[in-house]
Length: 502
Ligand code: NAI
Ligand code: MG
Image (cartoon, rainbow, N blue to C red; front, side, top):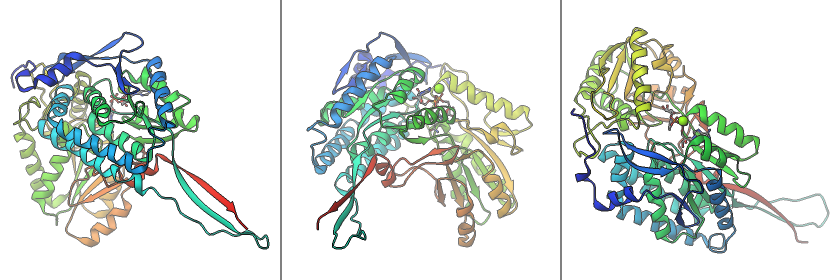
């Protein structure tokens, strides 16, 4: 690993021009300057060098964006559009994203540090899938007719439910997969007929501004999608508190999620919170161990561990422990670390110096608490925010490294002897996002799945998000669901209709 400069030779002229233009907020269908002048530097995590700057939005910018979203909500151009019109716009946006996949991926790699493979396939490619899936919903949102009678002789009634858009949705998203997170929040809201104000994360949000360009090009009426950049405590807070925002959809840390949830619920807004996780990967000795080890490794090292469903705790049945630890360590040590712009890179830097320090301090903490590192640990000497893939064994369940969300490439491994023991260990955190189970024993599988306290269990495959599958947690991992039909439902209100016609 050599000290690095940002390698602009791998970036297209169009993407460079986009970085140099540093667009401010996208409000009411166009890019507008911030009301106040502050900016936030955009840093390339592979070099630690600034590459652009974004606007530090304030409550004034949020006010303008929410006003535009509120106007659009009842406009004939949007509210008057038939469901198939919404579907066509969403498909057009998906096509435009596909046409611009290289530019979006380049911007995302430079801003967030992710690998090219992750940027193109999971992040942008996954977003296209989400959008096309959600584009199928507008014409399929249906209520029900309900037979009712009342004890009034001769009276006749018709009753039904209809679904209406909840209103303006405020989406606050994180920096780990910015483009995809924006689409996760925007797509179901649009399918439901809502309008949206997105506040991306200050650590990485250029790709979301690029999305603004494509939203305009796709022909969405002005104000349907608005994007305001800025700090959470300022722009984010103003969005949560805005009286004209009907629903807040947040993905990020549990600490901030609780704060936002309390504020939004206090104002009786709808809330979806996708928060932290400490998801277990459970490997029984009867599993296909090669696949299990590869899956376990992918699930913690994907995007350098900066994914909400990262499998950060690995439980292995004792008789398979050595074999699995060996295989996972080999994979960890063989991952090619480097800047995401290099197509050979398998593990990119973390998003920021702050995140690198945070992860490094968990690794130090694990060492001083008595853990043994069988991979990684040492830091990497370069300007970028790299952390080696790290595997800790000899850990105890009360250690910080086992209990807290690290959001880095750090895996804790623990052996188990029986089903009861591993269920207790797997559930022994405040989180409950996802779990992955590897076994060929159907009975074991059916015994363990209902007893895992989490929102998503995958068996013999990794618990990674899929557009059609609801994604969200229980316990301190959140409230409500992203993706799937549930995410569209969460952007709708039910109106009950009762008609007397005798
Ligand atoms: P964060 O929760 O502070 O940031 C997420 C989003 O919330 C950003 O857009 C931020 O600007 C916004 N925000 C922050 N404070 C706010 C406030 N008071 N009101 C409204 N919006 C606010 O997460 P942060 O600090 O960037 O990362 C810290 C840790 O959080 C990570 O190490 C990781 O453990 C966890 N995290 C988890 C994520 C997940 O998907 N589960 C995603 C991002 C972070
Ligand atoms: Mg923060």
